[in-house]
Every structure is written in C-alpha cells, then in structure tokens.
Length: 103
Image (cartoon, rainbow, N blue to C red; front, side, top):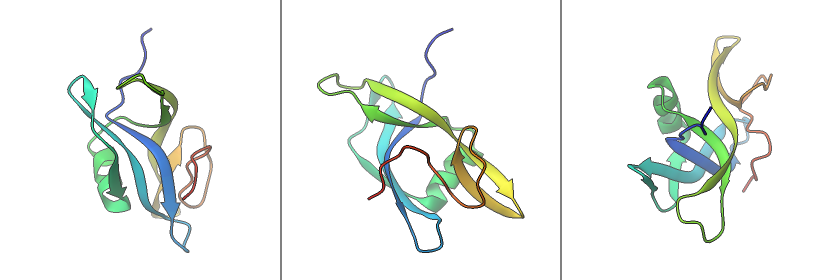
C-alpha cells in the first residue's frame, strides 16, 4: 500500500477562546508540488473537509522540497449537534488536532 496523498498538510493551529480552531497554517497540494505557507480559516477548512479533500497533520522535511512527514488524518465529526475538527481516532467535544503545535 502506498503513501496517502494529502491535499492539505496542517503544520500549526490557532484556537480561539471557545476552543474552536481559529485558523491553521499549512501547505496546499498543487499538482505534484505544494504551495508556500497558507493561512486557512476554520470555515474554509470545514468546506474542504466536506468536499472530501484529504487533510493531514504533518511536518515539512527540511531541504526536501515537497516532501512531508504525514502524521494523522484530519476529520470532520458531528458531536452533540456541532461540527468539530479532530485528528483520526480522537474523541473530543471541541476541535482538537493532536500533536500539532499551537501558535
């Protein structure tokens, strides 16, 4: 089985006081390469996940161009009538991206 192809890789996250993601910083796939750093607000991240885009947490490998260490898939879940953004296998009442640096 090959490596999963990511449409967007989240590098860092910013939460608001309600424990929701305010925005994420990451890289977007553009063909075989990735973009420069992009700031993506929560609403846009939700739209991408609803459209079936493959979003992962990860780290860019130094001096390797478009190579990333992918960590966990990011999912959109319904919890108590609210949409929450979590990493795979995470049970949470609010947005939670495990092992992603908070800025």
